Length: 383
Image (cartoon, rainbow, N blue to C red; front, top):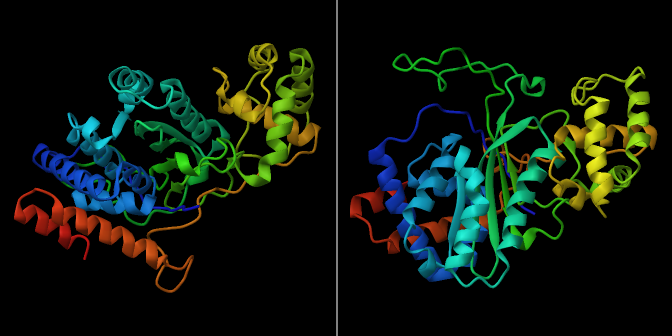
């Protein structure tokens, strides 16, 4: 499974019109070339690879370390292939902010226009579950604000989504020696942005997803590991997922009684939960819903409307203290674009994959029907 990290400082503003127009054009031509040469499945696979996606964004004209690369690259690609989706067998739903909430409707819309080999509801489920998993099952202090769902008529799909760190998230506080990339004399920031102002990007690829709640992501990209993350998608959280699921189908009053008892204990210091996080009366409402639904496993529990991070934290707390089941608290982020590589630290360079990505992009650019100067500039970025 491929994972990767990239420094993604939150740059303010947006891509200028003259640049975005060229990004649309270049994204369109590169995509046409890749799909013509390798097929739409290969395009999905490449988009799910955080290393390739980062290189793709840079080729289109973005700084490698900017969080804006994610939203602008996805936006340029979606806009660039508009009108030729059927020819490419590549469809894109969602986007940034409010547009991300339109993903289910856009998938349904394509289902009505195109003869899909799969029920559109299954694609909608994949879209919703990927977002639910990265916000509730992996609790790293980031709130999703961008979600793009790429798919083919055959039902293969890729998800690229990004989360914004909570401003009051104590986990991300780290000395920041230079604020120069957050503010300039011409456009000063209202106040200095601390290190926790880095985005975190999540990649998914359907061919890698054997189980939505068991290490399903193709990559989680960030600038550094956090000390403590509730990761219920880890293999080491298998028992915790099972116990949490069983607790969710218990009679509500029994679970609430256990929770009240736990809240009165002198708990060890934990940044991930406070006694005010979820009040017993709110928990009881949630438990009524799960008791009525009787979810058969953790995935079904997570899919229930109203089950969010706080509910999952409360059930995990009960599981850990009342039943002695341990969840995995290690951040699933593993590698970094910014450090190591040539010397084998923190991981050796995957030369075959690295060279393959360069070759595919270079070949696609050469075949693209764009102006010679733009083609030359794009190729230079790969050197």
